[in-house]
Image (cartoon, rainbow over all chains, first blue to last red; front, side):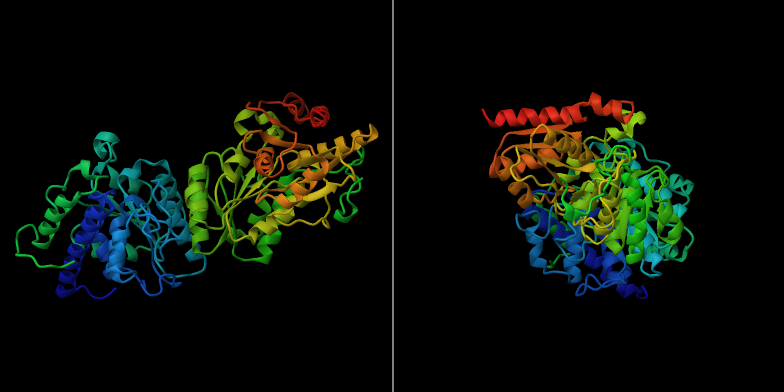
Length: 287
Length: 332
């Protein structure tokens, strides 16, 4: 992880915008898939792939890489888009999302695409797999970190809490999880469907180091990761408050965009909105 | 009568001197050997270390034993993560809970993810006895063999369970090992061969009237029936099929062609078990009259092994009747 100066931060923010554009384009092309979650997590994925992770797009299996586990596999368009921008595969391939024969499966599959650490989609299964990787790595005295990205909806899965107990019992300081706290799930808001609060208190009670951050403030998020890395006696949970659909006014906060892709007209409009930073600048042709 | 080449236990057909040992014991000793051979082998257990026989591994390799608590979904998925990193995890619980309770976690994070986790399902079948229906897994073979990438092994005795454990550790793929609680006959010896994917001919008649394919401890019932029916001039071949998946179709086809009639026996539901697997194969390759001796769409219940074996028609009489019936069907 390099020093986070102003220029680096600006580059990260601009990269996140490009990644949002790729997400919109690939979903329009796929005609199916999830929109709100991927847009909401673009800043965090950018922070990981362009600043936090020890990784090598040309050598995705390198032994000492940090592991980034995506538990809620349905937001994988943001991972694919970020990986393509990071150089794992050509941007052009993003157009194959969810198509027959594509490496970019609707939900990610480990053996399909180098750099995808686990097959995921069914909710609640990422934290325990991450804990297993962290435990095994520590057995061999490896220094890599295991990061697990979770949705807030999967806090309703019992297995998430089984994993929480296991990781704390084993003091997995090399395990850092991030909850995408965007408050929406398929049937409505999390607090209407099955309330999660007080979420931070719950994780503290389970023996985790907990931080709460603005998930769109890249600098603040990176600070929280640095704090978490310094805690060696407990696993860390970063609750990242995000806006579902962040960057596109029509999508923001609307749970109906959880599992719906934009159509071609909407896509063109959304891309314009992203390129002009919601009308603040003229906008170019970046993609 | 018995195939000499397989060096089976000499007392296997002698009721007075026959040795008894549960298959889970062989799993326990097999783990120690597998652990000595390969330091990547780790064992995860869901609060059942003694009864699943992983206690000795825990004592021998404490740093490679991971306690999970009563959390079978976590058991499967933590193991998936460890295998993903490069370990060879065995996960031990009762079959009713693993692969019962955690079936979807096994499907997604072990089978589809294609990582080498070995699931040891103990206390499988009605032979669990007094614990009753909740603990008598009768559908685990079906659940596991329906999953792509999964190998399924059902050892007939403790020695075979030992060898299967050692072999599964080096499989490099997901595997399921089905184990029983009760002491059951020792059929094989340390010298008896075992390879994953191979069926072994225990009784090879020259002109068989029927062939019995068996897996698990009920192989012994098949051997007893072959012996007793031989006295009545009924010629019965017996094949041990410890690997349900991948099925040794070559051996199965050979014996089926030779006998022209098939009976299967297992302590599992008819649906999805060994008999079902063999029927699926034979129906398109070489259909012959076939009978399945298995639990028929019922849950188990409390009772002794002998009582339950009779109640669920898995005893020697039931198998003998199935053999007679299938022979009659040949002549129709």
